[in-house]
Image (cartoon, rainbow, N blue to C red; front, top):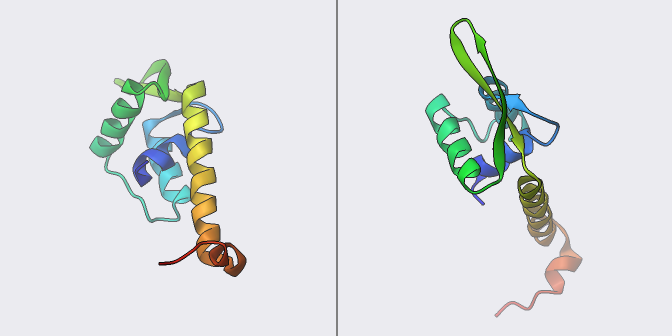
Length: 106
């Protein structure tokens, strides 16, 4: 899973959010390593929606503009949880000498 998708999914773990809030959450969760332009965010959301990982839960009009709220589907929650576990395991291989010793290097 690419970093933008991972952090967009992670941004939705605590409930539905609209685009502007997702942008800020992605930047905060990634500690600034992932910053998305608005168009890029919506492209990621469209891909995740097409994959069944996020869904639009509601819409409202604010100052004449439609604001869509996105939420994780159960498949999206499973995907981000699995990716977090994979990343944690990979990080452990780098930071834990005992974990590295169990891996045979050619």
